[in-house]
Amino acid sequence: MCIAENSVRQTICDPRFQGRMQAASTTMTAGVRPLAAAAAGALVLYLGVHATLTIGALIQLVPVALLLLSPVRTMRDMPAPPLRTALPSAREGSP
Image (cartoon, rainbow, N blue to C red; front, side, top):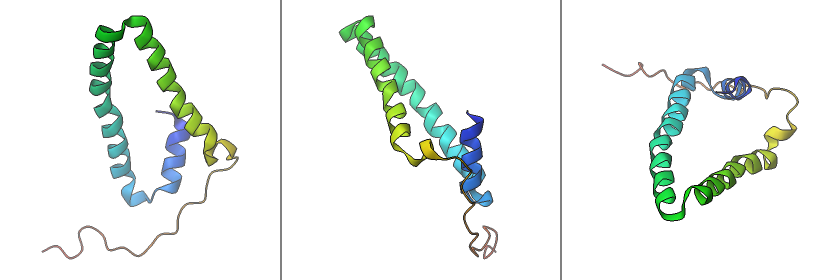
């Protein structure tokens, strides 16, 4: 995990939801790994190692392109934290 990525996340996310946000991010990234491994194994069987590695390298360019097209590329300062809203805590209203 990149320190800059965590810093931006912590700045833009309400402190009450940072644990949930980090858990969701970890679950999504860790959950995709077995599927990616199975897909890579199937591609090796059907296309061979060279073609599979080429496809994998091309797929790695997708996040780079998304990052280059996003406003993150031009950020020079950390974004301002969002205004806190008056939401009731999770314990309010429970018996």
